[in-house]
Figure 1 (spheres, helix red, strand yellow):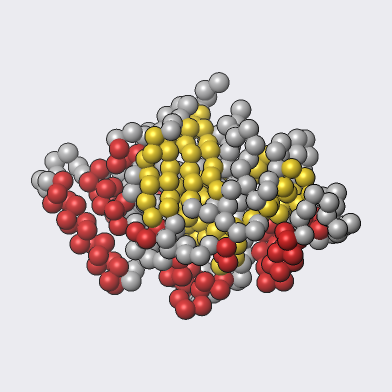
Figure 2: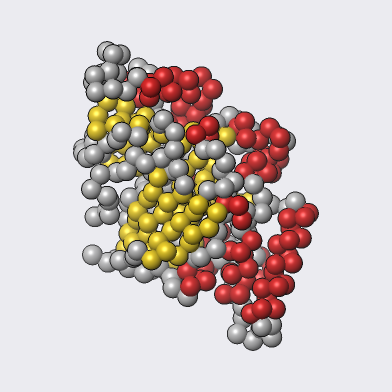
Amino acid sequence: MSVKPAAPSASFSGPFALGTLSAPDQASFPGLVVPEGRVLDLRTAFRDPALTTRRLFERWDEVLPRLGALAADDTDAPTDTDTADAWQPLDGLRVHAPVEPRQVFQSGANYRQHVIDLEVAHRAPDDPRSPEEARAEIAEVMDRRAAEDLPYVFIGLPSAITGPYDDVVLPSWAEQPDWELELAVVVGRPAYRVPVSEALAHVAGYTIANDLTDRATVFRRDMKAIGTDWLRSKNAPGFTPLGPWIVPAASIADPGDLRVTLKLNGQTMQDESTKDMLFGIARLVSYASQTSRLLPGDLVLTGSPAGNGMHWGRLLRDGDVMDGSITGLGSQRTRCIAQGAP
């Protein structure tokens, strides 16, 4: 049983957003969502029964003006006979992850205070440094990384993605499951070896991702030289709740100044601005594109701010409810279910 609001909220910036929705016992469809809480089935508007949000991003420059026009025409009695019957209330629809990406690029150690907090939380019991000394040392490392312009990007699995209101199953092997709410970038144009100055032109929009991580399996215990094990620690099914909406980039005035907030059972745990990112969105997109070809619909996760469970000494457990929101992008709610629990 999933935890959902009585009606999914259409709260977001701008005149419209995109999502993937379904009516009970019906196939999912790409939807144009307007702030009044109405949804247009874009399969009808584009006369394409196989349309998905990812296919929209493959034609983003072409379809964006059309989406704006459709949103502007939304009234209680639409004049476009082709779409009149395709508008429906948001209430009663299931909200899925808004896009199925082919690739997920994840940014690590991108929030200064977050990394400092993690370093202190992960200190070995016999670490001779005081907490203050550890903080000062890692602060120097972060400042050096920023000065040397060295982002850290790795790969996630699309199979870890789930909907913004779906339950998250905590695997029995995950000893320290933790939350990491993040701003996610949605690619709208193929990007390969793009300079920073041109990178934002390849961004279609933004959404919310909660990049769950099992802290106990982040570092390999059998051989420290191997380093991090992101496959095991971050990619269990459902470990990336995504959405609810993708808001076009033009509707977000400054993605470098958004509030990222996560509440656990009603208590605020993360509440930080994207200003604390070491590397901005343009730099992350450009950096990833120097090695890989980014494709329309792909995601670039920008890292998580301070306030994770390791910092608080409180990890996720059965029955926990996480409420995540980012300025202008709406909110998600997910409940944690221990594997094997009824």
